[in-house]
Length: 366
Image 1 (cartoon, rainbow, N blue to C red):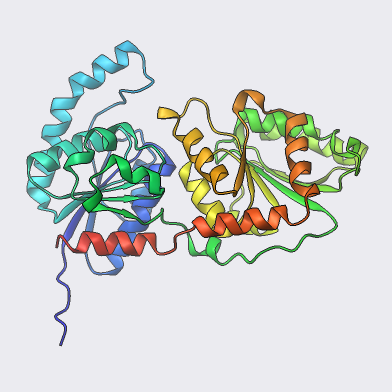
Image 2: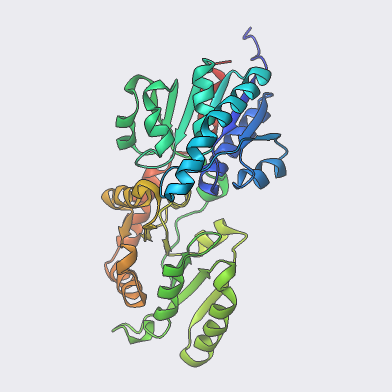
C-alpha cells in the first residue's frame, strides 16, 4: 500500500503585477487541494495584496521596491530596504518552517529568496518569460528547481534542475475549440486589464480603414480598452457604428476572456507571458505588440519566440498604428489556411497541467 503524502507548509512569493501573482495563485490552489498549507509573502503595493487574501491565502508583508528602470533615488531607497526586508523574511521562514519557497519573480521575490537561501530552504522558481527577470537571473545557479515556459530559457539555469512546464492557465482556455472562418473576421484587441494606449490609439485609427481595403473587409472588433480610456473610445465607436457600419463591442474590461478568445479569429495584444500562455492554450493566432518599457525587454523576447514557431506576428510598439493594424490583419486573412496554421502552432506551444506539475515538484521537498 502506498503511504499517503504528509501535509507540508510552503511559502509563495512573487508579485507586483498579475503576470507574477496569477501563476503563484494557481500553484497555491493546487497545493491547498492536496492538503498543504500555503502562505504568501508580498508587498502592500503589489497585486498580491488584493488577490491572495481574496483567495483565502494568508499573506505577510515586507517593504521593498524595484532596482530596474527606476530613478537613482528609488534605487538608493531599495538598497537601504534590502537588509531589513531579508531579515524580516528570514524571521517569517523561521516561524513557518516551509518545505520549500516558490517564486514567480518580481522585486518582492529578491529578499524572500535571499532569506531562503540563507536559511537553506529549497527554492523553486517558475520563470514565465523567455529571459528570466532580474531576481531569478541573479540567483539562477542557487535554485533547487527551475520551471520554465520556453526551452531557450533553460540556458540560464543548471540543466539538471530545469523543466519546461509552461505557465498555469485556466482550463477554460484549453477547452476552446478551433474556430471555423465565417463571413466576418472577428478581431479581439486587448491591452490587459488596464488597457494599452498604443493598442487603443491604433484601434481607433483603424475604424474608417477597414472598408477601404480592396476586399472592403467585413470585420467585427471586440476591444478591451481598460477603464481610463473607455468612455471616450466608446462614444467614438458608437459613432463609427452609425456612420461607418462598424460592428463589434467595446468594454473597459472583459470579465469572460475565454469567451472573447473563443469568438476571435485573431487576437491583438501585448506579449506578457500570461497572455502568451492563454493564446497558446486557446490555439489563437495573434499579432503581438510588446510593451517597450518591460523589464529586460522580456515582452519582446516572448513575442520573438512566438513568431519563430509561426504562432504570431510581431510588430514593434513604435511601428503600430491603425494602418498597420489593418495591414497585418488582412495579410493573415488573405492567405488561405494561414490563420488555422498559426493557431495549430500556438496550441503546440501550450503545456497543460503546469500548476499540477509545479505542485508535484514542490512535494518532492516535503
